Length: 151
Image (cartoon, rainbow, N blue to C red):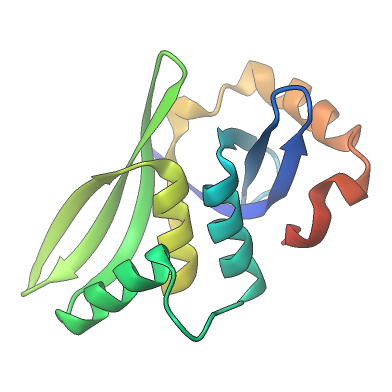
């Protein structure tokens, strides 16, 4: 079953020197943190803030190509977790058919935000027993830890 989620924000993890995109279900009960790189965090943060440059950055370029060929991003789905790596698919509508493309979750999320497309996660990825622990972890963060990218 798929669960609809929104980007709650981005957090910098100083222990691992990396960023975390925090996805929260629409009921606010479950969260899914995904560790991502600086470039990907920047792309997601810019999309959350609605910032666009005069010249397209990579995710803007991909979004422009999708538009120019007459396709539409209809959704992004985080599908699986193998070892410590998340997998996702971008679902496009093109020529009256659905096309699915494999993508890193961070790239898929950045594109979904630009296209105003919904983001879903497979409910297997939300481990209910860990949800309370993750929520306590999030509550323990200083709101400033979310920085300017809090949604």
